Structures are given as structure tokens and as C-alpha cells.
Amino acid sequence: MSKSPLRIAVFASGSGTNLEAILQAIEERTLRDVAVTAVVSNRSNAGALERANQRGIATAVMKPASFDSEAAYVEALNALFSKNNVNFVVLAGYLKKIPLQLVRQFQGRMLNIHPSLLPAFGGPGMYGAKIHQAALDRGVRWTGVTVHFVDEDYDTGPIMLQRTVPVYQNDAVETLASRVLAVEHQIFPEALRLIAEGRVTVTGRQVSIDPLIPKDTASNQ
Ligand code: GRF
Image (tube, rainbow, N blue to C red; front, side, top):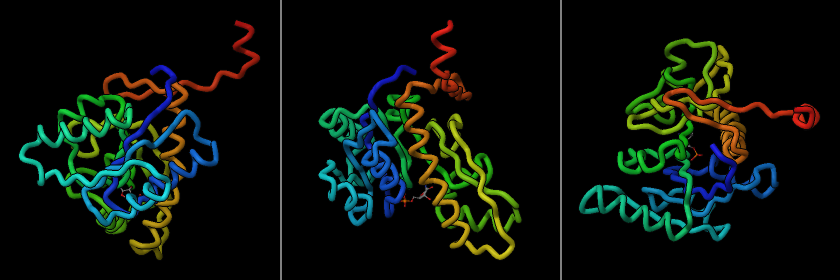
């Protein structure tokens, strides 16, 4: 993938702490050549919208069921995207399925974050506390976070980054969710940085990330 500035539309249904982590990385300039130009939610009271409003970022509440057809929903999204020059989509706790047409339109340019080590504890209906409860019920010693490209089903797209999170004997859903969320806030900006640097290539279901070539070896070639 070539190096190019990312102009991102973030889809969020919840409080937006992942959005916040991305925005803070941009503001601290640890994430360069990346801008969030629109935030979309299916819930008018989503905290993510407030975080965007505070920064003057375009927002839209779009409830898929409120459109006459999926085509009308996609048309409205594309109108928002073109108005804000969107070239990349990030799903940060977005609980609605993205229309197939949009998934295809943004193939290789749509990322999702999931609070488990996919394929474990993924798929339809696996979101939020349910994921962490399933991990506790299964007795796993490690869970984690997955950042993956979106394909036509839930949580099945090519995996880009994963990071493990330990599960402790006395963990409850809340303590585990909090430990996992802290890692989400690190891994999502990291994934976007790698993509903005043009170091990520998706080939079928495999994602390759080019290593940083130290400057001195590059000059010897
Ligand atoms: C995160 O746990 C994310 O992994 C999941 O939904 C949650 C979103 O949280 N997909 P927030 O809205 O970013 O705080």
C-alpha cells in the first residue's frame, strides 16, 4: 500500500474512547498524515459524537433501519464521505453491520478493532461484556486485542495486529474489560500509523507489514 495521508471516517456506537485515543495520538503528533474528518454513529447519544463535536469534526447520526433501502443508506454515507474527502474507514465499537457494498468499496481500507484474540470469542453477537464473560467462562489465561481489515462477515477479515492481555484468577468482566481497553488504545493508533506510513499490504487473508529499514543500510544499497 502506498504512503498517503489518511482521511478517516470513524464509526462508533459507544463512548468513543478508541476514537479519543486516535484523536489524542494525532494531537500529540505521534500519529502523522492521519486526520479524522467524520464521525458516524447509529446512536444520537453516543459519547463518540461529543468527542468529535468538541473538535469541530463533522458528525452524522445514521440509523440503518431509518433508510428506505440499504442502497439509500450507502448513498447517504458516500455523500458524507465525499463531502469530507474520506479515504479510509475505522470501526471503533460500531455495533451495526456495514453494508456489503461499502465493505467492497473500502476493501483494504476499512479496519475494525475487537477485544479478543480472534478467531476466539468473535462473530455475530460477540461484543462488549459478552466477549470478556466468554473468556472468563472458558478459563483462558490470555485474551487480547485484534485489529483486522473488514470483510463480508463479522470479525473474519484479515488480521493486521494482535496483542495479548493476561487474565487473572480474580478477574471480573469489568477488570478484564478495562485491562483490554487500555491495550486497544495503544494498538489502534499503532495500526493507523503503519498504514499511513505505507508499510501494510493485504494479500488475500494475509497482512504483511514492512519492517523499518534503518537509514544506514538503505544508503548502502
Ligand atoms: C471497545 O471495547 C471495542 O473493542 C469494541 O467496542 C468498544 C468500544 O469502546 N468493539 P469505545 O466506544 O471506543 O470506548
